[in-house]
Image 1 (cartoon, rainbow, N blue to C red):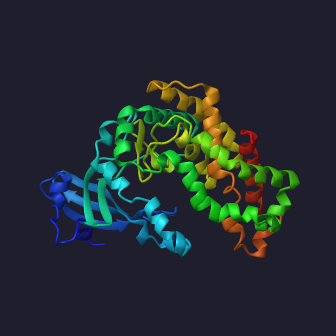
Image 2: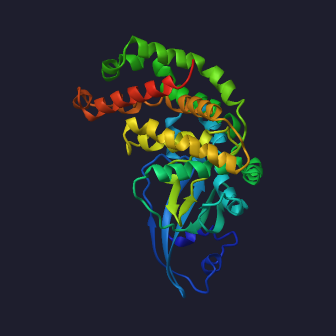
Image 3: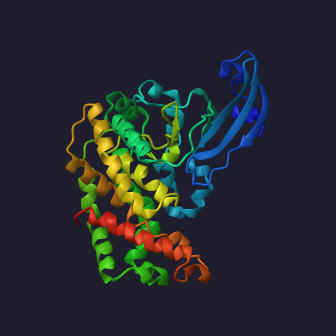
Length: 372
């Protein structure tokens, strides 16, 4: 990658790299693409750029945000639904976050990466030049989970953050649960339970009984009522994808990245990704979910209180459990891994078999915490 391609097309005013970085001279020493294993919807690429300056060698990250219409993932969506999917994923949110004043309103103990410039590459993509953040990559303990949850509560309660979210945030944030269900979950998961094909899989059949199937179907039937309940919760603010991968432990606090789903959101929304993302990525055992919840819920409640939002523990627990269930119950069993699995991977005791058993148990835990 030529760094000039990350500074905008030649027919537009191209910023000087040195001027953008705030140095007198800048000499590029290397440009390397940053590999990323997770599905990226509106991110085209990430680059690490090494630069020699009069102040020494510095490293920068350049993230290219672009329309979902250019994502290879679009091909996985039925043609009739693609235009709606593109509209549902406004790619401009993250560039707008770095152009905004959000960095001035982040709660104590958190910040955005220092942004040196946002460059429009064309009418459907932009390059965000930001600092390379040195951070602690050790496994999260209870203290770090609690600190992150309290931060997210403070973020949710901030009226100045809410003002910015109203201006540039994802428009579907207040109804995110309904949108996610009708978009990704219905086509990829729910239909398999409704038409029975999921229950026919021998790996799933080994680990579920008639009572589990009945609970799952009752839950699916009850989801519309849960949408109404979720959408009656207080409307605060949310990062939108508050997983540990996006909360970099640094400077005695957190550097918060990946703002593509920044929005006004329902109370407790960010808790879901915080408590479950490491489990979904198989970085933390399934049985730890309850432990992480026990730490994060009171810490998030304290963060809300720090920002002047008072809510009972019972109200917050209900808000968390129904949002977690709607977003993760039907997708917990790895149907995407079971369908193409070879027979050797499907036998009792295999890694896939154990994962399915763990996820069935996790679904039971989530359903135990709600009333349908």
